[in-house]
Length: 314
Image 1 (cartoon, rainbow, N blue to C red):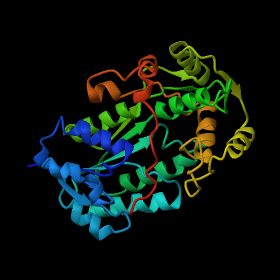
Image 2 (cartoon, helix red, strand yellow):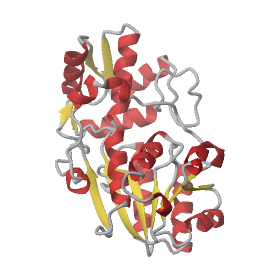
Image 3 (tube, rainbow, N blue to C red):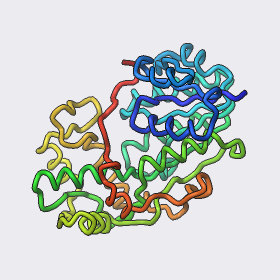
């Protein structure tokens, strides 16, 4: 019998993976983890094995992962050295536990040496340490989650704003729903044919931010305009509305549950074309097309960012 480990099922992404993977894999083969086991008691009540996973404890992780066929490592919800250390601990634990394959949720163009995104440092690092380990792997290089942009759109509407300021220029993104990316992760967990694979998980079509707003305006009847800013101007704007620069900041009064550093450098990445990657493996992996932005705006309340889950060892 297989052992399939899904980490972080208490989070926004991981909870969707859990929902989808239960449709594909017998519950007897699943092991769901979270930093706080009490938060996933509902899965234990369903007859699924659960465990506490502390990403600061390599030996503890190795015990949880012991001889697993597959382990899903969802990128941690913080940025920088703290995340790189947690990811390395997970990889080291997989090696120690003789895991068959690790599946890692990365980002498009993660291996590009000139990608300016602050997030990319952590993703390229994690991919590199996995590739230089004995582990088999699948990298799921996800495009930008559309939920961050639909949430920001509705925030602007609710605040009575007439424009949204971005530093994305006319660069194009293959926006994709977090739900689609989570479904792709569930399919990868159930796939025994892929080995040492790097997959681009892209949305349906490339859109500029102006294109995205036009779709949103048509669907909702609003008329939000796009104001193109420089990186410095966008930082100043986020500072003015109380958005923290990094994940160590205070999000309690922030109208956006994301960091300005992450959003600004991703905007630079878009402007410079690093996310306009025309190759997608989503349909080949999942057997269906990704959701369109039109569909997402027609059901927008189901496609919002949600609350932050900032700690890995609470």
